[in-house]
Length: 299
Image (cartoon, rainbow, N blue to C red; front, side, top):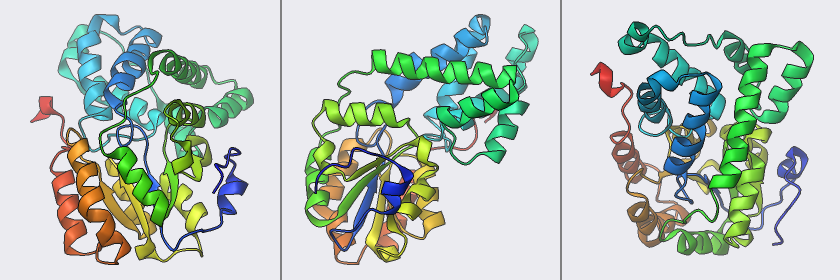
């Protein structure tokens, strides 16, 4: 099947099955070893720069790393994580004692509550319509992050066993990418490695949530036990739960072992209809134990 290069909502809705099963694959932290690099060198640095938080840099980084990398918030949309980072910072005693004022993100919260496709295009539209200066700063931050990612993340490494896994998937299932990364970065990163032939569609943040991606790609075309999502973040598990489909975790800090097990064991169980139940729950329990809900400074 030729690689579809027009990644529109209409094309995702019209995607026709070529197999009886579908596998949805996350990208950052799941296929590409990019999470630490993007967050620490791009996202967090730009938070500090845009909101003039240099005097509490170490606390900002610790907080942002917990939200984006080492908690149950890992892998969520950038705007949701920015909001949570600021809210946690506002409550930290050392920030309060420093006298640094953490900006209110109430306008961002209201926009996120009203908008399902949390991406730069929809935020740009909101800024144009409202002329809201707080939203404009968030948009400028997001655009700066994307620019910095494009400059910094070049030929990001692929986890071992990924290409073996993708080849297995392509041979037996329809494969799509579901991500909360902007489409431009996703397409560029998959193309840099010549891996676009493994997938039939790339769905980024512009097309909505991962659960929405899955619904658009699968509705009326596959049974619930015929769809599997691979991901490294609780948001991937939640998307599976919301959609009623199956979830296979790529465990943070154990990515290669997770992909090896997928290739040697889990994918066969999926294809044979023996994945749901005890086996899936064991995988989810291992995954959940790796990501805490409470920050280390509150324990």
